[in-house]
Image (cartoon, rainbow, N blue to C red; front, side, top):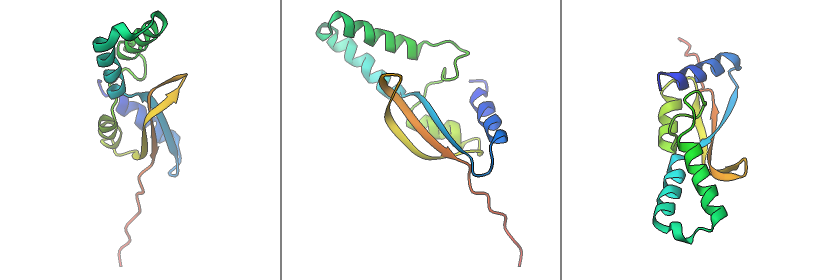
Length: 122
C-alpha cells in the first residue's frame, strides 16, 4: 500500500549489482484463505492445540501490523504485479508453498534484475 513495496524494491535495486538476486518469503494468501475456510467448515475436527495453532496463524498472518513488511496480501499473481510492475526486478521462479519458521503457509519468490542489454547502432 502507498507504494511501500515499490520503494523497498527500488532501494534493494540501488544496493545490488546488475547480477543481483533477491529471495522474498511472504505468506501465501491463497493458502491462508484455504486454512481459514477449512477451519470454518471443520472446526469440530480440530483438537485444542491444533485449533489454537490454526487461529494463531490465521490471525497473525492476516492481521499483522501495518509497519510489518509483509502487511500486503501476497499471492503468486499479485507477486508478479507487485514486483514486475516496478521494472527493477523480474521473477524467475515462485514456490507456492514453502516452509518457513515451522509453517508451510509461505511462498518463496526468486528474483533477478532484468537483462537490460544496450542496443548498438550499426
